[in-house]
Amino acid sequence: MRLKIYFLTIILAVFIFINVFFVVKSSNSDKNFTKSPEAVFNASQAYIFPISEPSFVPILDTTISRPFIKAKSALVYDTRSGRFLFEQNSRQKLPIASLTKLLSAVIILENLKLEDTVTVPKEALRVDDEKQTLYLGEKISVENLLKLMLIESSNDSAFALALFTQSKGFNFVEKMNERANQLGMADTHFLDPAGLNDEAYSTPYDLIKLVKYALKYDLIWNFLSEKNVVVKSADGKIEHNVKSTDQLLGVLPDIIGGKTGYTDGAGGCMILVVDIPGKNDKIISIVMGSPDRFGDTLSLINWVKSAYRWE
Image 1 (spheres, one colour):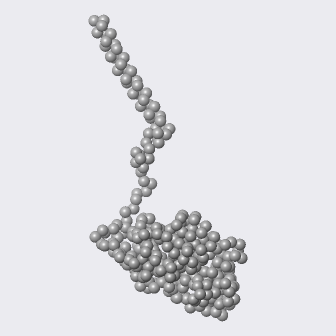
Image 2 (spheres, helix red, strand yellow):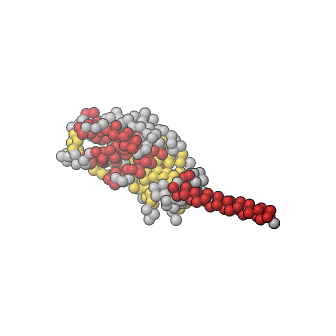
Image 3 (tube, one colour):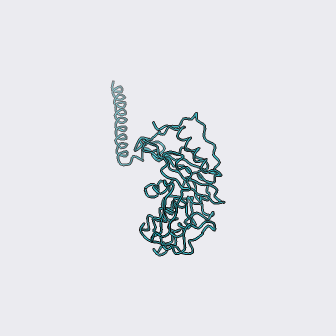
């Protein structure tokens, strides 16, 4: 009988020990979790709840075939969802010609006064050895030079503005590359304010960052949506009839603004921003190295509008 009681006592002690062990272990685990959740879960194990619900709009209809375009690289981006709706070699480094002037416009607005008057120097005339859009000694406002540079893509105006900034104590091209770096444009480098040097380069992926940033400046897009304007010198004696280089204005609806570019080395380039009416949304189309920049852009925008739905 005593032997039986002895064995029961041992068994009971073992059960008590096991219970105490697991209670203590559980308590320590709770403390560890409270102090340091990462000690219990690592990034590969834990499920992180999203801060906001991901947007699946616009929704792609996969039965509609992707468009064939001739551009070397292209990208279409939806600003509201932050999604790429179309990509073709979007990280390929290529010369961008006058798309450069979009960043030049940003630098001008951030560093100069629109009412400042610029006297056009000899160094700003016929900088592309082809077309002269200004006159030697002409006095013209920064705002009107900006119109000329953006609407008709005047290379003379871009250089006149860049040369003017020397009197303000900074190097224009250095400022451009500094801003590009701040925007995270890691595969981009600028060499002049107009995009004439084809050794400069960027990618559609990087240019999306620039366009998104530039959208905060309404004046840029107000100018880029103009088909024809008249620009005068400061004294009113010289008049410039300015015509947009964007052939899609008046052809494609809901255009917010666009910038063209072309050199022999870059081929045809184009940025176009289009509104999606009633949806509080915009799409940005970029094509580079295209023999038909307007046709490619039109194909991309029309495809996006037919292949995606916003509700």
